[in-house]
Length: 179
Image 1 (cartoon, rainbow, N blue to C red):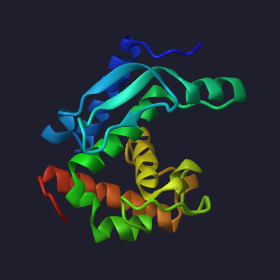
Image 2: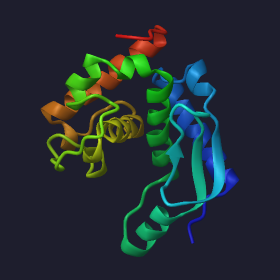
Image 3: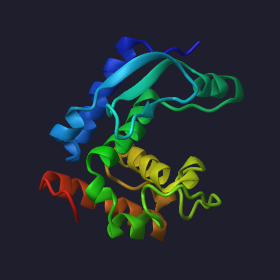
């Protein structure tokens, strides 16, 4: 069984925060986001928008169990990369609530808008479920590949999203609250 332990969570969290720092995403706002191990959840993890800002990772996840039985795998690091994207969106709302974001992702970050999955526009089926998830999935891939866009994703729309993420890092480094 693939349970998340505190030791595994701490190791993955350290690795991901180092990635965030190396790309300019780890400022005092993001540093204040706590990552907590909880007993159970249906998702791989979640971020509490506008509340405590915490990222919760369940020791036992229905999503992880489902993928174990049905095939598929999502690493703990990828879950944290994805959830830290949500934390950045929460702690840097002015940068995400911008025309730059809407131009890159096709809609406002907070819209509850689902597209039909198109690999020319989305890096995963889950990315097509909402602009916020599109951002988080693209951000996760950005960190996983150290800012280098894999050739299989190098379409015009995805390149535009990648460019937004680079601009976001620059804006955060300059401590901008808006583009």
